[in-house]
Amino acid sequence: MRAFWLIFFSILTLAAAGNKPNFSGVWKLNPAKSEFGKAPAPQSLISTVEHHDPELKVHSETTGAQGTYATDYRWVTDGRENVNTVRGNEIRATVVWNGKILASNAKTTVNGATLTIVDLWTLSDDGRTLTISRTVQGPQGTAEQTYVYDKN
Image (cartoon, rainbow, N blue to C red):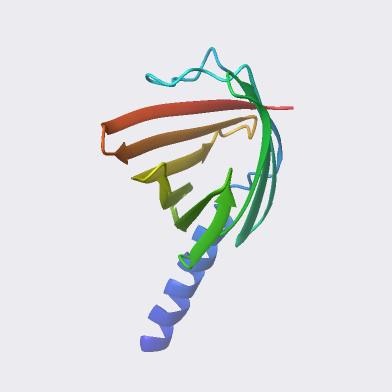
């Protein structure tokens, strides 16, 4: 009987692993569907994602009030700590799967203020829309944002 349960749970684990979405692609921000809270909306944001689980790489080109800049980061999605430097700030994040949702919990310090950033990545059933729900906590309170991207 023990062998039965071992096989049963192994099959469930493999089935759940197969349900994880692949976020690979070129994604263009759809500002009309996004919510930025008190932050200004970027004029343009295009992200190129390479996702070969457990590794995820993101290259973004952003144009906004601060000009045009690029960012790059790399995550592993197995709960190990990821360390990236984005726009001169070190960001430490753990990234894990919660069913079909990819959850990132990051901490960084910007201009002396410590920020906690939680991102939840979801992919539409047709694979054409990426939604990143973001919560930022810092000394000035909590901000909620939603970034909705269309696949190019």
